[in-house]
Length: 300
Image 1: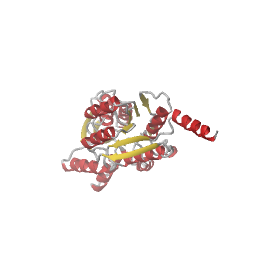
Image 2: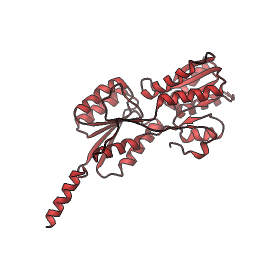
Image 3: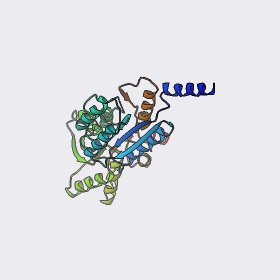
Image 4: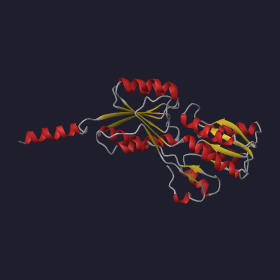
């Protein structure tokens, strides 16, 4: 009688997909970026709540080729799920198609690809963030002057959409000029970019940064060069230093940008339990300025 009960319990576990350990491979862009590290930490924390999830993290160190190789390895090793935030949307689409064709579920978080070869894509609306950033910043500039745009990773969908949304609004104002510098979402690269700006004596009246981390680097260089102008600056992510800078009046505003890692792991749990997961999930974001910064917790 006891054996029958044990068999029954095992059958129940198998039925609900909880007797198996599910292997998740997370091919991350880089762990050198604070936001990307926070994304991995959130995925690990959420996955630790479920005994049947086994997650492996691979750091591509900013290399699209390495990220693709890790995805290829996950496919070869028979992983059940792949999480990624693609560096390069076109080539990565090709390798993710192999995963989909083999029945591996693909969860994209924060960045997309150039095809629909994924199971679910979870991210805020980056184009709208770019639009809203432009409306807010240009109004503060009285629609006149030069904006320094610190760009994220060149081919990442977040960078392209944040730029496109901003430029589509800016082009409506003839007295607004945009200059661009690549910062790759890294504080160190933003520092190099600003040093070039000062070396070449390029003038700017405001900064639109694709991430708060780059804006932190920009402020460091401005202070180094004794540039005490109170120029409007706006970033994205809303991390703790951004909150402090906004409250202190050193940064005009930021946009919350959740890592989406918790939602990505939850999507996997839902799929395991037979629930329907939407193909595309848009995460809410909001603008944070001095009026509400004290009330809103930073992303990390």
